[in-house]
Image (cartoon, rainbow, N blue to C red; front, side, top):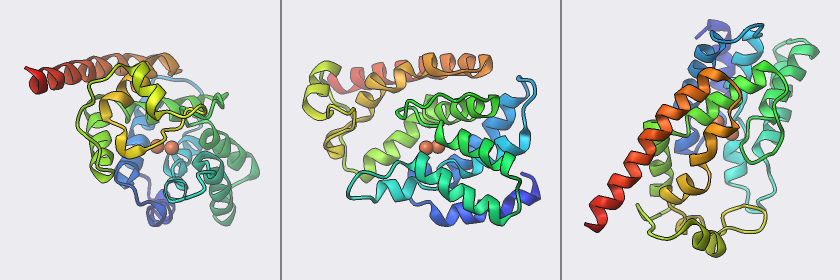
Length: 220
Ligand SMILES: [Fe+2]
Ligand SMILES: [Fe+2]
């Protein structure tokens, strides 16, 4: 990583707490962004790198918010603006970085309009699938006391534990295989860049094999 980004990274590190959105996630997304950008044209590497480093800065604040009103992509873009202003970045760069952060979330419905926003979105989603996605999801499952598998149809599960706005009602009753069935399985269709789509196909194939094997091992 470029030296000039280390100060920003240490500011971000102080704000993180959750194991699945820790500094390792930030660094994997940063590296994935840099890899995906090689397959695209006219990428502003500075905008992309800073957006990758700052994208989850408000995640811990959202996770610890008992009112469940904080959206980390919205608060994160505001926090990022302040940090970048203090560091002397131009208004133009700051607005571009804010757009990437605002649009990085799967659930938010804000579509990224710039190539940097699209790459960040794709990199962040790639880190939620495949072997690393499974590992991260089980880290969270352990924190919240979830079971390792729930043998239920996704429809029945939805009626029992997903609220109308799509938010999980009781996180302790959620499971990694339901997260896969309801959300992660469809991630590939939401991606923007060709290279990320190829990588997603491979990673989702592995996830499918994993959950089949898990079910087989539990119920045979
Ligand atoms: Fe995020
Ligand atoms: Fe993220």
